[in-house]
Image 1 (tube, rainbow, N blue to C red):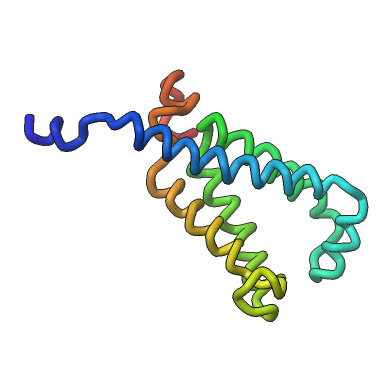
Image 2 (cartoon, rainbow, N blue to C red):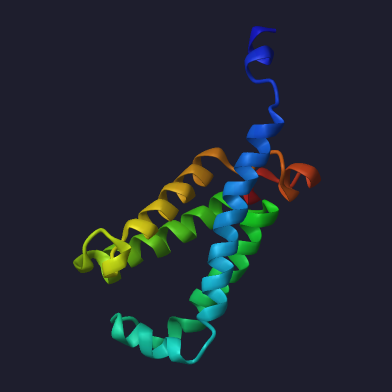
Length: 139
């Protein structure tokens, strides 16, 4: 009985957690849509990445962003986004220093922290997964 009192559902926390997921989802959708532009092939080459990754990266960001917003496969999406962000930090932005004004990685670090929070906490109560009782392996 004591544990039930401690873990009583909190609507404000649920909405706040969804807000974090949705915010990061919108950010990734916006950046993912940008990556469908053919100019991104040149950016990838400039970053030392193969241009064939343009469409898979764009799709991962758009679909993953939508998954975060609705709360489907949030931990898997969090892992994929964490890998993308770690690559951005260490492969693309590290040499520019910390501050984003100089092309640094502080913004990517903040997004990475949010993704780690999503990985740890899962889909939350405001989610498709919670409503439809989707199998645990897809959470």
